[in-house]
Length: 243
Image (cartoon, one colour):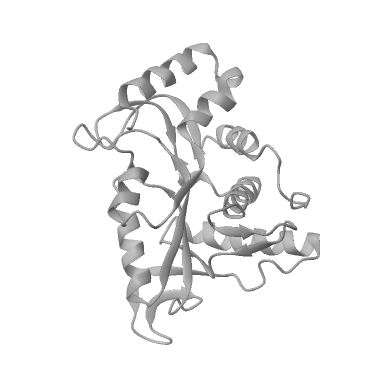
């Protein structure tokens, strides 16, 4: 089966180029909350332009359309392993809406109904005590398989909170897809990356994947950012690489 009509074949390069052009991805010297001096920084709060939202949604959809989040039959047909795309407040909200819209667009262009039963949902930071009440907006989570989308994991606190919300509402976490994985160890005492530690802490049976990873910066942007920036990225990787 051919790739979905709206899927970019080299979506990583296209997305990275847009991130740089919109100052969402920058290179230099940045002090992280951990105190590390990072040669790059991704500011996901800048993902507000139409082209960036479109490309981010398409990149998420490409990742979500692959195992383990779907089953692919011998004829190429896809069956999702989730029912709802959940975006933790606040940065995950536009992402979950954008992803569901992108999946619907792909169905419309291909004349298929692969994603017809997929909905979106997100949480409020504070529960609403009037009207419909509650702290969930969008599809109810009870009895549903829920796929979480978010920008990045730093310490895993926000992810554990999202998992707790879904489980409290009666849903089952089917997986997690992040925009970016720094692929560096959490600390000197935690040698795993934030994603690796999260997978372990969640019991090892919830798949976590990333649209972009640190190594993509070197592999996809080497010619664009220059040899000196590549050298600094490689030095950072060698210093903080996760096990």
